Image (cartoon, rainbow, N blue to C red; front, side, top):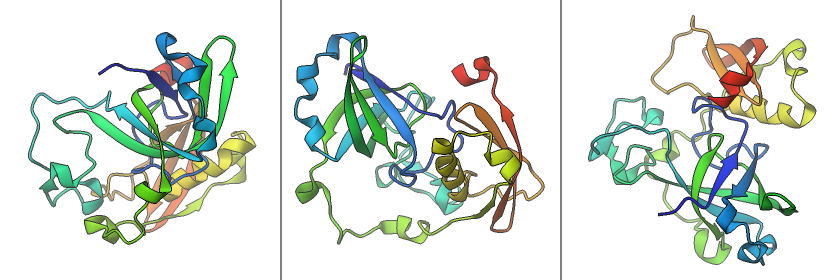
Length: 230
């Protein structure tokens, strides 16, 4: 398959990315097409849809062999389920699927059509294989059963983000970083209350500690250009 585009987001690495798309609606991303696909006719009519599907490459997953079962982090990293009953990146084919909100389609003189999206759960510069419109009548199933995910979806932390730290972020990034932290970025099986974690987002490294169900930010440091590019 050909890479048709890349998405640019505020996540320079995997840690802290929401476990599913749409959980943090404030997250912004821009889909920029590869040169051979920058024909505006290719996205004609797409602006009429509020949401789109992104099919993308798990570019950071490293595997030599696939396993029939995986350990979903939200089940504590101990219980195994079938790989096809999960959304693990360690799959026979490294394909991801995300539903995102299409904010607007911008026609840029140099980059061609650029898709501005909200709620993406993708790392910066993730390769995109394909884009399709989200169609509510066929893609939405409110009556669908949730499987084991129904037991883990309500987990949420109380966040203390001191003003001296939150104010380093532009106003349009504050809601997103706060919500990312509330989703609990740790692997579910890591519960070290003495550990200080670091989450890279939108040019800064957010330091925090979690005790019980409370997350407290204890520092924010600007990332170097090298760290942002990694």
